[in-house]
Image (cartoon, rainbow, N blue to C red; front, side, top):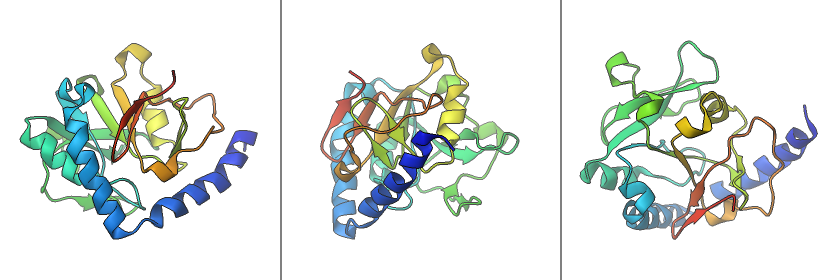
Length: 198
């Protein structure tokens, strides 16, 4: 385990507790706020295909956002655990309201159907869950490395725009980073979209 990994473990626990401590009313207000402002941002308006996620463990919930984007004609996708490449993701086309199945972590995802796979080259924007973030563009995930492995295989020019969705309580001054971390381009909260790394 690297020194950065050792520093991340207690921080991950602390930030997960902070987001889980949000009340149902706070979570609902955050979901409403996100769905109210993010679809009108140019980054989202110019995207044809958008990947997002099913909220878990206190994550900022994009289900209302998904409904708005679908109503505006966006093609949506959800991550699924890759069946052949451990700790990698595939993205499958998704329509709000469709039935989902629980993966091995208990997180709902679309049933794997080859015709519904969305190639990475067709994703314009990935809205990613996270545990913590800093203003340099570093993202702290749940520790499995699924997004980093999946996106790290791509050339920078081939990557879709990466936006982390987070509650304000998930911001930290500086995250310890690893060489394999894939930085995010921006963070979206209930009230703002902030470009990172600058």
